[in-house]
Image (cartoon, rainbow, N blue to C red; front, side, top):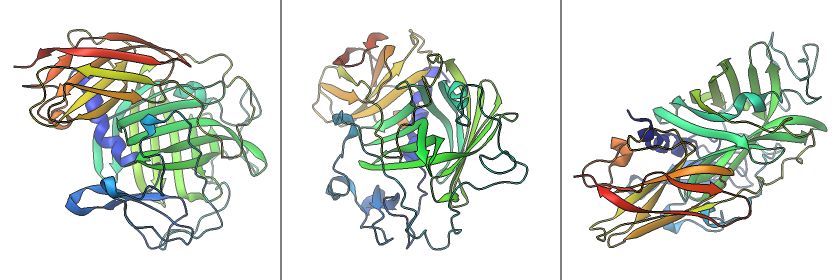
Length: 405
């Protein structure tokens, strides 16, 4: 399969994982501020948010969902960073779940961050495990299995420095569905620790989970994160690097498999040295994502669409060329109504740097299953250069120049 086609595989996976680590399925008790998927009429998906009494609010479906649950329905249209949602450890967990352990959990024979088997500090400072920044930097792609919806052939995330203190990666399905990972140093329980933040939007509703490093095994290149305050019984995520350009992310939620991502680093990213710049804490769990630029992407065509369709925009750091061979860094799907002659989107939280934009007009609405343009689809001008800069109105546009017969 041409590498350019791989970006369409991303769609199926990240929709499952959009809301952070919240597991699919509804239970009578829940942790306040957590969100879960729920079924809507017609077989579509919705989302429900856990209330302060430990019960879920009504399922929010499509355009009729309650705007009070999340006032930011479209994350692409706002440039204001969102406040995070922190788990309240005083509330009960779901019925049937293992009783959470407050604070880090220890595993026999594993280096832990407190106690007799304390891990050796990183040479760069006193905060454990920050070598993870260097190990993660890059564009990662690979199969994700053991998800609530099965196995997905390809998932992609581009990890880079979003600020002198925060590493960030993001994948998008569309304007209301995305997945965001972030890594930084925060202060929890009176101690500065490495944080793995997982969140994003699902049908326009924000989800955000923070986990802290509870063990770091330098010899095995393994980093284990668990839910802050609630412990590993709720969220347990381990990053392991079998080789320099190989990574496994194994995530469990309430003791059940949630994702097993085996990824390969397709492109290296260079971080500032040292990174992070210093070991300054980024707060106690209420810090927003660092400000990042956005880019407005636009595709035009003629004649007008005979029926509703989708436009797919792709950003890559290398040119795809006439053979469409490249590794996408970001991609997103945009709906286009019948009669339309253009589509555009503001892609949010883009790393600074030079990109090549390519776009496909999916007239027959099957790209999510064929993973490549086919008969009737249009392709925009190849490799439109866009240099994303901070604090600027970045934009890129293209016109369909070829329609597949």
